Image (cartoon, rainbow over the protein chains, first blue to last red):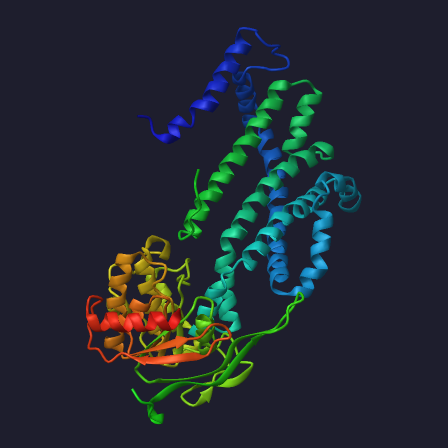
Length: 252
Length: 256
């Protein structure tokens, strides 16, 4: 019997091998669908020339800044909305109105306001990624079992001790889910934003490769983007097991 | 057990609790003109038709609810909110899932309100673990424990802050029949060891007769005390004992 992690590799490997063979035997137009080996060779060029690091650094810097803003603002607003009715009545309609708007629809405005550099990207990421954090934090802070609150009151907890000892830990699994979603959204938004207007970054790199018809570079960029998303999500899951060892999620 | 005033711990004095109406319904009395006195160290079971307000009675004593009229007195003083001297043990254990067994017990002790009591946290925790026979499970999370163990932990957490009365709201109702019998003996053992006063809500008449010094029978909503039955039988009591059977029979007809 193979270990489960090895079994889970079979799917992606099958696709890669089939794709490679199809390209090698010219079953597909290799100008449009170059073999993955060619994309990986180009990736090596990008790495050794340092171009990849430059693009990656630019993109990740924007992502981390926007994401951090989204988490800070999202958790604060989510808790405030869950605990204080007036704030909820004020913000909830705004959140519901802004949420369905595609973050990219606001990107032209963001460029006018914050320029073509980092500012405009950080702004749209922060905006788009804050919604899952707000909504999940809100749900977490609202779903606290009344009996837990009652038990802590009987034990003698003050308002502050209750917030720190009950409200916060009880909301943490929800906040964590929101943060994980926010990270995923940040990665999606940055690539799209850099394709619309940027002079450096992963999205820009892929678009530039497409415009100069270097399909293998398009794929090289896509691989890197995919691997980053996959690896960071794995990191988030590990982080949760470490931070919330008591929390049991039904794992599929 | 006749009430001598100096040993009286709890008194319900003509307590009425009205829930406000709304959505076209008028206000409803849940409890009407209820009088009840509980002595220090007593084990009192409370039975009554389901939904009659047994749990509400405990919530009033815990301080989660305040009577609409009348007073709930604890050692002669009106109750105005929750306090460590009156600890609730919930039917569905309200344990803190992010804390281990030991930290759940220590939670109360670490609060500012209890620091002045000078109880050594480590010693108290291990004494409590021993009392409820959970030694060896100190580092487990509640989700790792069985239903009976969770209920023991809930009792241990409540006892850690040294309350004077335990309010048990159908604490064994969610357990399977076998665990339930074990836990009935456990609660009696803990009661005998700690000499805490216990108010024990149950819908199981057998359970009430096996365990309590006195049984309070509550009326249909709006509830009041229908009857109080003394149980003069020596412990341990067995279900098979004809005296127990007779009493169960009597109480059953009362509740029909």
